Image (cartoon, rainbow, N blue to C red):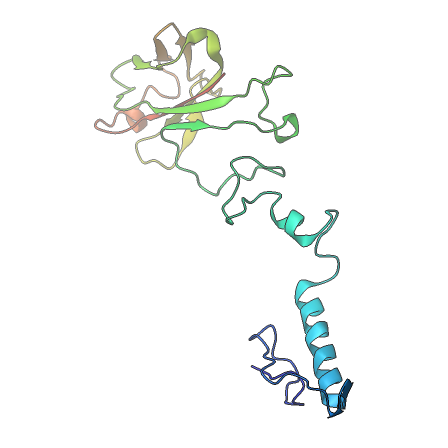
Length: 216
């Protein structure tokens, strides 16, 4: 640390450490008169410049001060607020399990279901064991109110886990399959002699894929 006014090197140690001022100015050589050395002035200037350099230019941005800027998305204790502004960024390689609820994002974020203020939520369900070669259908409970469902996507993976497709995929051989949703279940069907009717999709004790449901 640096003692301001001592002429030490560096004149100011901020931001690496906090400067000190342990020796106060006194009236000298007579009352109400103080002899100021160049070191006292230059050290103070150095501390001010270091502080400005650390903060950078216009650190408050469009806000009235730095405090207001910092607390735009933070509580007074430094924790993040539950809501905020800005872009929603998807994490790399998210785990597709459980229920993901995304709330209070604007339409520009692609999640708002409409002007009424109702927002989409997403539920991801594992299909579980399904030997598609031997069995043409599988039934999976969705656990939702059918009237609230807005879209369904069914993702199928092969036995090696190195290829995924939609259940309703088209290819040069045949249509792969389709799904239907009822009050309780999503019913999955594969088409005979289609993409999924073969030994690449006959593993057991294996999660065959995922059902992704957008709902309100």
